[in-house]
Image 1 (cartoon, rainbow, N blue to C red):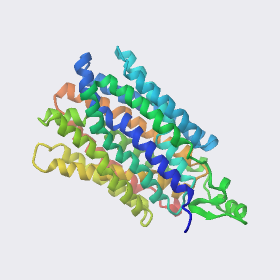
Image 2 (cartoon, rainbow, N blue to C red; image 1 turned 120 degrees about the vertical axis):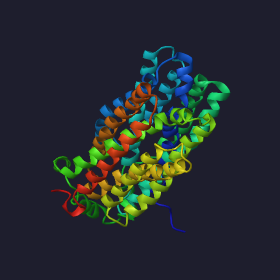
Image 3 (cartoon, rainbow, N blue to C red; image 1 turned 120 degrees about the horizontal axis):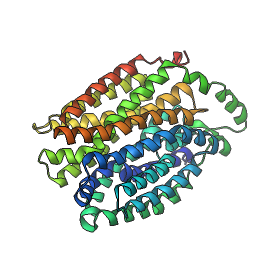
Image 4 (spheres, one colour; image 1 turned 45 degrees about the horizontal axis):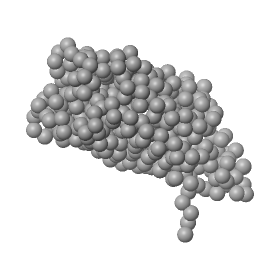
Length: 408
């Protein structure tokens, strides 16, 4: 019986870490907004600004984390990030003031910088080349599956209160995440392989050197317009996604939907995104990745348009499918395209910069959406604006150079 390539065990470990982290700090936050406002009387803009602080800290850290991932490896960063993230979640549970609330989110962001996409994608990218789309798709599906955490978090808050829910979730982060970090290995060459599991014995050193010679240098990539367009498109994606993920439950409640039903919709977004994460990631291994990415941005645009009309029968289902599949596919394709076009020697730094650009969009999205609701009493205008931005992202992606010309 053929032995399973160890890279797939790393994918599974990263899947589980992404599942729990994504459920706590990203998709599950929407369940805390209304209980926080009820207890403290803060505005929607003030509460949602915490999500922007999370994005701000990760925006500052992401390029640096990418550099550290290339230099130190993923395991150390994951371990430290999980410990800090669990501590920040527990600190959130003892919040007594707005300043303390923001401080807890800065700590959460600091920890998240060590155990979210920059590090997990680097861990996976080091072990795969031809199967990178499938591997990234499976790993990133953990973030999609984290939607299952949303009803659990809603139930925990309803049964025990939001403070106790924070304590339980923080402790769970330590118990689940810390053991998983010890599955991670940094490079296949250290274990007698090259990417995709091909044995490197006895000529592994020669094969490895030949493989490294194909890599495009970091500084030359930074000078390309294509890489700049990838960054701009990713900023738009995250601006849109963070606004929706943060405000979807308050928005649906404002249309008359019950809190339980709104929680199910919030859970459905990441769950349905698995179709895009794995399906579009798989398509990216067979077709030109930039065209698959452009199609995914187009799906997001149509989804945001549908979100503007959820009070009309059927549009909520159109939103769930189109938006979720689109953003899920992009979560995989951004890393797969960079790995495919520019190699893995500087992958951590390159994906770190892309994630930093995404975080800049993530800073803007939740706060602006909250301000629009506070000012206009409706989210519809911001959803339509974000639809337009997603169309612009399609144009950015279609403009990037193909793989053969990506160094021009």
